[in-house]
Amino acid sequence: MANSIVNTIVDQLQTERTRLEHELHRVSAALSAFGRAYMQGTKAKAQTKAAPAPKRRKISAAGRKRIAAAQKARWAKIRAAKKSKSKA
Image (cartoon, rainbow, N blue to C red; front, side, top):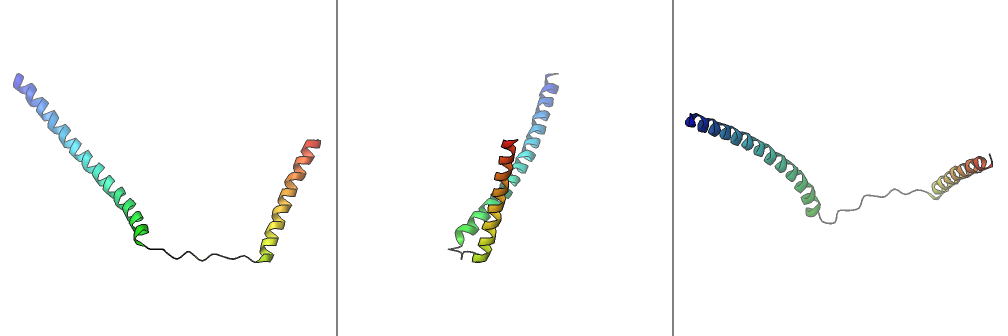
């Protein structure tokens, strides 16, 4: 009787050990995948010396004026809506 209980416990422990080994394998695989992705991103940045800045787009003075006028019109519309609400 005592032998069968011990054998059952040993079998359960071995089953649990196998399950834990599989789980640890999955965790290790996930860590290595994330670690590689993270390290490749940082290494690529660290290895490249001063990379040239991307070319900046330039907007003409006329374009800036149009944008400013449109924004002023939007704000004027909002202010007018606020005034009409406060009067009502």
